[in-house]
Length: 260
Ligand SMILES: Nc1ncnc2c1ncn2[C@@H]1O[C@H](COP(=O)(O)OP(=O)(O)O)[C@@H](O)[C@H]1O
Ligand SMILES: [Mg+2]
Image (cartoon, rainbow, N blue to C red; front, side):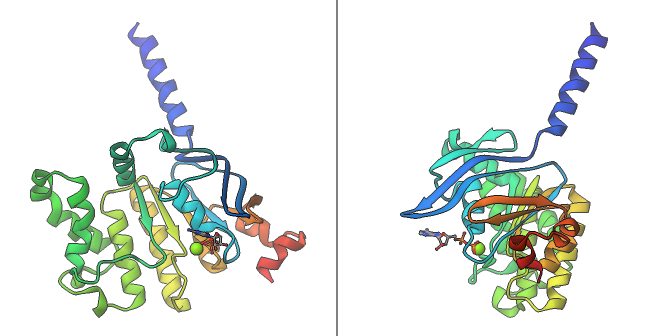
């Protein structure tokens, strides 16, 4: 009996491991006559870095906003960490958001708060007073160490460079130990050296926390460095899906256009 239940447990575990952390099925989203996402499909597996490459205005940010339910979809299904997000009430959605880190293109740091206060912000939302008393200082310290900016703890965002602000935004996205992190244009507006540093940081974070990532970008170097797999978003659909290297070799004119 015990043996049988052990086998069942093993089986269940392996099924869980195979389940994608994010699964999107036939997603449609329009604004008036503009059909931005058309029957869009994708899945991210645990521990995987999936990049979505698309031109400016192709619907990449819209896709991310739909996945974290900042935007309503017209039709389709979105399963995030095993939950159908369209069936969740606001409390359930709030708990789920604690498990999904989000790095906004604009960083979205609070200008009037110190770096420490910015990092404490998600803890105030998702941890009890007791938990914060015990663990907030250590959590802030570790998140800052992860991004190599311990010395900025009492500084204000305006005192930091663009690359440093991006790192702080990453530290804030990490502080609740999300299972998946969504990056919206993580290197846009940064110089090539800083972009490379951010890409390396994304990799080291994934290695340390074994998190999965959805990376939305049109920066080929960032995608090349960070992704295991790439989806090309063209005309609202998943036009192609492969490794960066294979896509780069493609003879398809619509794909070649991105690499020329
Ligand atoms: N809230 C909105 N209302 C109307 N149109 C929008 C809205 N958000 C995005 N769009 C349109 O959807 C398209 C995709 O936008 P977006 O996802 O931001 O592109 P990108 O791939 O550059 O991130 C654009 O044409 C944009 O104008
Ligand atoms: Mg965008």
